[in-house]
Image (cartoon, rainbow, N blue to C red; front, side, top):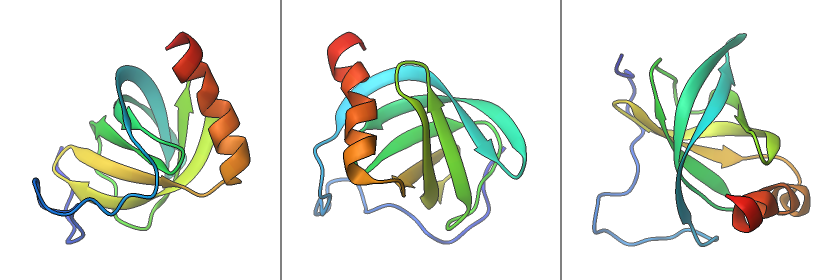
Length: 108
């Protein structure tokens, strides 16, 4: 399914204004939105958010919860949606999010 929305990520090759360094991971996760869990692929992740490949459409600003086996559940909002990819901005405590993601750096 494709998402129907107007918010998009920065153009490829454009300026990168991220506050946190991203790590390419390509791992399976689960995304909770509108009361339903769906499988997703985590393409990259940082302490501030992640890029996901999803099956079902989401909309920018939608509250989400990303579950990664080694990290637990991370609350966030859809920052952008483009086709079957979305950017989730984590909304939990930054220190707790960074601590949860240590598992990926150590074991992932």
